[in-house]
Image (tube, rainbow, N blue to C red; front, side, top):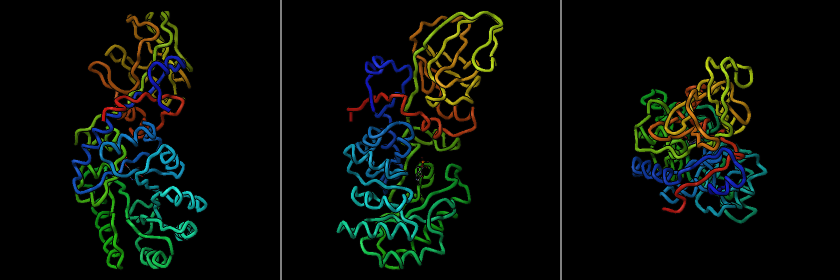
Length: 383
Ligand SMILES: Cc1ncc(COP(=O)(O)O)c(C=O)c1O
């Protein structure tokens, strides 16, 4: 659900995410320029990495992405119900019972097991249609996909199954965020070899795709026909070594309004566990956001927030719905806007910074922001 700032205030939401759809469009254009021979797939699984759907998906399509990628059929259903007609790839096979839904909604399935191929074939035949599948090859990540030795058998099976057309073949890179990693070269060679075998068997592969954001940014040899861009579409970097490698703008900011400001005496301690003790009297702001808003508890005592263009450290433990910040002698009024993630004045707290503080990746920082945090979409209509 998207809200205006007034609706957010009227509903009493103390914390919200601002998503700049103009930044998403800009990022898609930057990525498309880096991969001129390829289509761009906007990867919008995980509620568009926390940025929200269908708005993020629509922004990507407006900027030239030609297709979308999700992990689950339910995510694709949501996009179709929102009126999105572009091809939607579902990256993993769902339980076979979902095959009918996939055919009915004209989704593009990844296929790598006989069981699922047979259920798709039955659903397509029943509907009197053919479904274009993308054969998922495992080139070394050992997650999902056909192992090299099983490709020939799979082709024999698929050729005989009615209602199935092999439209594409694809794989996923395990370490593309580390440029020049030798394993990526190996995966690329195996992918070329396997797709060569498929073509040699007489199948006209319209689409081959391998690149995620990292490879879209740094490995043109892996671009093939489609680049599947998730994290970079949102203006975030796939890994530390790729930071600054393209013109990208972060799209999401997490903000809250200070709830209470009070002067706390020297010697008092704050929050669960009493882990932060004031050595002198100080103004303490209570910020109504916590780990139920996707602000992880391990940020306690580590993260900075920004108020009025200045950084202040989280003081003590982050609770489920609130945390505190000792701002010393500074004075702020209740209602002051606090930036938990994003920029204010010359300061920026990035998803990368928060991720490093708690030993995770930027992907998890934005993706964890749950639906109880309303999204405000900026630049929804400016093309
Ligand atoms: C199969 C597949 N392709 C592409 C992506 C997009 O990756 P990234 O967000 O690094 O661009 C993902 C995300 O994990 C994925 O699972």
